[in-house]
Structures are given as structure tokens and as C-alpha cells.
Image (tube, rainbow, N blue to C red; front, side, top):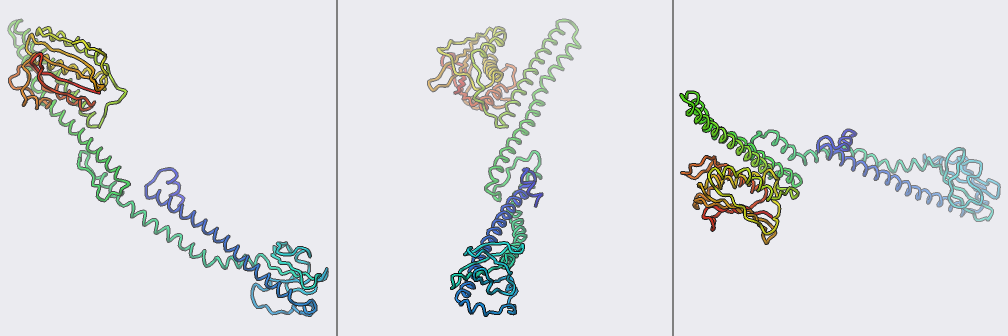
Length: 458
């Protein structure tokens, strides 16, 4: 019992042990309170009853005249009850002891003027004494009883109550143990189900036999299992995607390296080395995009949400990204336009690094899939609803409706497009939008004729 109580106090051990310690502790406390209350109530009632008997005996003695009391011979009175010697009386006439019972003390059990009940010490023993005047005004009658006799009567009265209660306590503890063990059985079975699950198992735990109090826990466990399965799936998909997509640029780099190795003149060697560098750049860009996509999928799988404190001003980030991409646009004689904004726009609810990833992928796709001499236009503006919008549009060929519907699929590219790429840029954009609550809308640019992308946030 003490071990159970210690486990409950320290918050350690099983739930069953804590429940047993708590319930048995409460039952024991209630049992103790009931026992004490029963003892005090019985002691009071027995005392009242014995006081009534003493006053009844005194009233019988009061009804006898003094002459008859003096003729009583009580020294050889037979003992009719085991408690009889402990109940005595005295009759005093002034300072003279007229008569007393055989076991009564010779000294006065109470002062002559101490009428009613009193609790004197006689020969070192506690007594309960009732004193009352007789028919003669000089006569005082004392009826007394030893407190030990009263205690024996109280204990005899309580014995029939205490023994059943004492026997019932261990039986009650056993019944409580069985009831608690039966009540927590579904939790034990749930723990066994969780311990026997495979690490990559995605099936939810059943809620049919789970107690209502544990159903929120099981619900959250199922959500955790689902997120974990998503992370495992994303990791496996990332590994497969990386192996599949890196095979082509690595093979191209190897081929160009072999060409450079076997070149007969400097021009052929330089051309092969330049192609090797382009292949390295393509592989580097592909790895970067794969890592970005894997990170976003991991955060989405963990149920991450945008923090209200994580907001990035778009204007400064946009200028930095345009500065990085401007040399690329100049090589193809493309024009990057940034339309002025009427007022500062609401910051984007994403970290600065991811806002830069979003802008870089939007502008890089617009430049990459637009022809030479094309125009790419960027504009930020505030909305009447309190949010903001980023618009990127180009003068390229745009996309058909079927292609727009598939945009954002991993490794999807429009057939016939000769520009190098892996099709991961739009996957990164859609993942960012899902993670930070951004709205992405696609359509055709009315002013430039190509693709128009609107990204909105609040």
C-alpha cells in the first residue's frame, strides 16, 4: 500500500497503481473517519444510557425514607452481573455515611453540595458519579460507576460493528483492485497494439473499444502515425526522385568528360569542358530544388503552420532575387520589369529564406520558359480585404488548360520545350503555398499574352 501511495505521489508507475493508491487511500480515510465517528457516537449514546440507569437507581433510593435506608444490609448482597461491583451507591446524612453498597468506597464519592453528574478521581481511578438530595434535606445520595466499566460496555457495543468493518476493508481493497484492473484493460491492450506496430505502419488505431477519456490520445496518436508515414513516404520518394533525376546529368557530365579526355584539339576540349560545366550547374540546381522540396514536404508532413511573428517584407527580397537573375535575363536579352506600388504591401507570412525561394522559382520559371527578347513583369499591391498580392506575368507562349491543370506535379514538363529543367520549381511553389496559407492562381496575362501567376496572402 505504501509503494502504491509513493508511486501516486511521485507521478511514476502505472496508471493502475496510481488509481489503486488513490481509491484505496480514499476508502481507508473514509473508513477511518466512519470508525472514529461510530466510536464517538457509541460512546456518547452508551454514556447517556448508563447515566439514565444511574439516575433511575438514585430515584429508587430517594423514594425510601432514611429509617428504611439505615436498616439495609448490603455487605452480603449477591453478585448478579459482572459489572455489578463497579456500580455503587452511598447515602449520607450530613457528614455520616448511613449506608453504602458492598464495593463502594468509605469516603464521599462527591462533595455534599455537588449535585448532578461529576467525574471525580477515587483511589486513583476515574468515576462517573450522580448526586441527588433525599427526602430528608440533610440526606445526599451518590450513585457511582467506574469509567472502566463504561469503556467495557462501549467496546462490547462497538465490537459487533468494528470487526465486520475490519474484515470488509481487505475484501473491498481486493474488489477495487479487480475493478481498476478491469477498467484499465483497454489501455493495456492499446499499449500492446502500439508496441507491436511496425515503424512504417500507417493504419490508424481502432477507436471502438477505447474509453472516452483515452480517445483524444488515440486520435492524436493516429495523427502522429499519419504524419510519420507521410515523412517516410516523402523520404523514400525523395531518394527515388534524386536517383532518377541525377542519373541523366551525371551521365551527360561523364560523357562530356570522356569527350574532353579524348579531344584532339583545344576547341573540341574547351567545348566539352563548357558542356561539362553546364551539366554540373544543372545537377547543382536539381539537387538544390530536390533539397528544398524535401524540406517543404517534411514541414508539411509534420503539420507545421506559419507563425504570426514570421513575416517578411517582399520588396527588399524581390530586389535581391531580381539582381541575382538579371544576368540570366540579359544573356537572352529578356526584360525584367518591376511596376511601382501605390503603398507598402503587407509582409508575407513566411521566413525570408523561403520567400526568396518562392520569388526565385516564380521568376526563374518565367525567364526560363519565355523566348528570347521576352518581357517578365512583376508587381506587388495591397488588396481591399487587407491582404496583398504578388503578380508575375510574361510574354511567353503561356500554357493550355490541360497543362495548367497539371502544373505543380513533380517532374511535369510541357512536351516540346527545349529549355533545361526538372519540373520541380512549381512543386516547390505549391508546397510553399500550402505550408504558409498562400493562394496561387494561374491564368493568361491580358497585357503580355503569356502566363500570369497571382500569389495572395493575408
